[in-house]
Amino acid sequence: MAVATFLSSPRFRRPGPAATLLGGLGIALAAALLLVGPDRLIAQIEGDRGIIPVASTSDIEITGIEVNTTGDNAEDARLNGWQEAARKAWAKAGGPAMADGQIQSMVGAVVIEREQIGPRRYVATLSVVFDRARAGQYIGGKVGGRAHSAPLLVIPVLYSGGTAQVYEIKGAWQRAWAEYRAGTSPIDYVRPSGGAGDSLLITAGQPGRRSRAWWRNILDQFGAADVIMPEARLERQWPGGPVRGVFTARYGPDNTFLESFTLTANDEAGVAKMLGEAVVRIDAIYARALAEGRLKPDTTLNVRTGLDPGLAALIAAGQAPEAAPSAAPTAAASAAPTATPTVAAPVETRTFTVQFASPDAGAVDAALGAVRGSPGVKGASTTSLAMGGTSVMRVTYEGDIGTLADALRARGYRVTVGANALSIRR
Image (cartoon, rainbow, N blue to C red; front, side, top):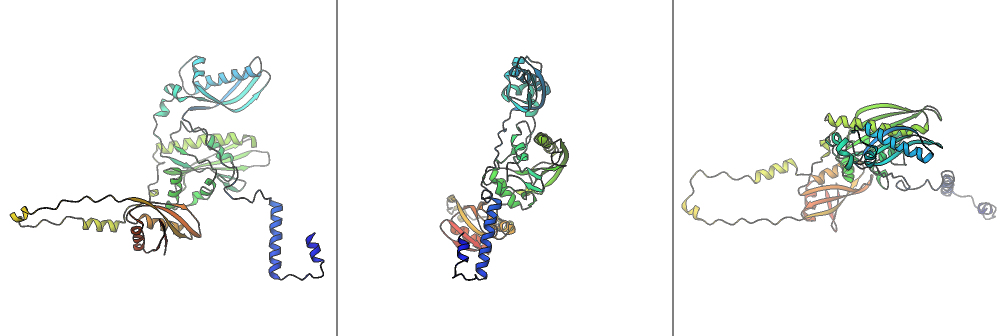
């Protein structure tokens, strides 16, 4: 209405090129808001996308127990089904013959995978969880005796509909890994929840990166020694039809291939069960790789933080004792008083903030490598990454900030000293 009134005014003037451009941009933005909606124009870390891995106990879970029972009513039939599931699960786990009451006393939970309840009938597929403290002496001995892996960060990559995702949404592949009970597995899985900043730090493009310094920063955030990438690629044959899943087990910063297999679900309703079966099979693949010695932390991820080799050789040469004189020491020399050695005071370890330009990933690696290789540096890790701008790292240094600045200047940096912080640039 206001635009029509303005155009009909006798004092209207044709806008110039700049005004026309600004007006076109405004109209395009308004159209985008109408078509997309304001709810989707949000920051990437906002929204409800995290799934906490609640099934992280060491209890013993037996899955895929099928029951078909009857009773006086629906509740009685269901109770009979759960009791039968406990007996079948106990036998499947290799437990000794016991009374139903003893088996029931060791059941910690019954997980419903699928169930159909009738007036007097109960048909279901269940998982039975036995408490390890009570049942471990009967069925947990072999599991407990296996060697465990180092902590491994899990990046579950899902390819569906031509799009790769990890934590951008609450995906079915992430949920399958979050719900998997890994207590009986020899693999020590580190499963991020996917909420908050996890979706920015861990993306589908991360397995394609090869920078060891970059990987080391991510692994340090989660306390992991290495990384594994279980991939799921879903292909829908036609709407409402079968869903074919191709699953691949990969590991390490080089995205090394281990094994691959294919599963099929009859329709969309069976996808969740298919993904659950895939997680179990991938866990078995990683367990075999661990037993064969293939799944072990990559030594190249241990970024060197000590002295430069050339500098260490010079220091060692300077500290070498002088050769003893050929002549025997005189009595006067032997009677000369010797100075009491003094013990140097321990150098205080401090933490400083260092700002550096980061136009690309190579510049980040170069800055981290230069700082970590400086004498006295005990550790350095990025706290803020801004590709194309200025990033920030936290440096643990044995000495004061002036000595650190001199060490960085010796490596060719121009250093600006601030309040407990440095700014370095080439």
